[in-house]
Length: 154
Length: 118
Image 1 (tube, each protein chain N blue to C red):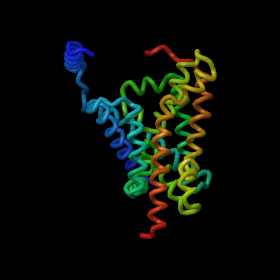
Image 2: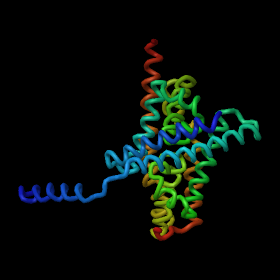
Image 3: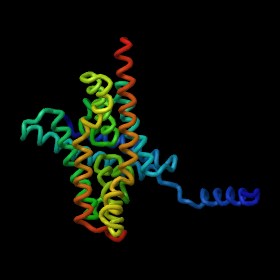
Image 4: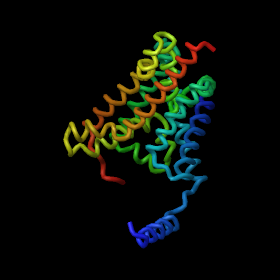
């Protein structure tokens, strides 16, 4: 790249920075707090209900709650409701596990026209894939570390 | 366990995500990966478990909770099976969630069509 081009890129970068709207921190955070908190409260409600009604252990109830929340997240995404929530809530709808379900369904639905294998099947993981890659790799690393700490004997 | 704790802790975790997105202009995939990985690391150093005990779903429903389950499973695996458990434990503990995400995700993607953006 020539010097001239580099300078133009730099200027353009500055221009974009000036022109792009400043985020409204307080409003965005308030929305994220309320929606994220509400989703977690719904999870707590489901957890308490199934733990009492079905006599599950605490851990089983936690796992079952996550299943139900994933179901709700993917259903709402399918119905188009989750996108409406997400427009306002930002991270409040992305960070809970329902947002993980949303990140699976939304691209799969959008790329359906590319076929059921390379469209739906492949795009299911366009966002969830990286999450699983980094999450699972990190967990294996800390597991190995823990194993060596145990065997060296602290 | 209380709803108020779940609401406040869950809300705060989401606010941290929002601040990351607004402050550093990271897009959502980066935020998701940072959250899962930090969930794993915080669990490994013993900081996330007290939060789960305090806030219940407020700590398990946000994505760091997924990292928490992964790390806890890996530790449990190591305790039971040694080094092999480090590889099998994490996914074993989260297998329900991962499978549900794949199956429900696939079903919903088949059943519904993308709406035109509102």
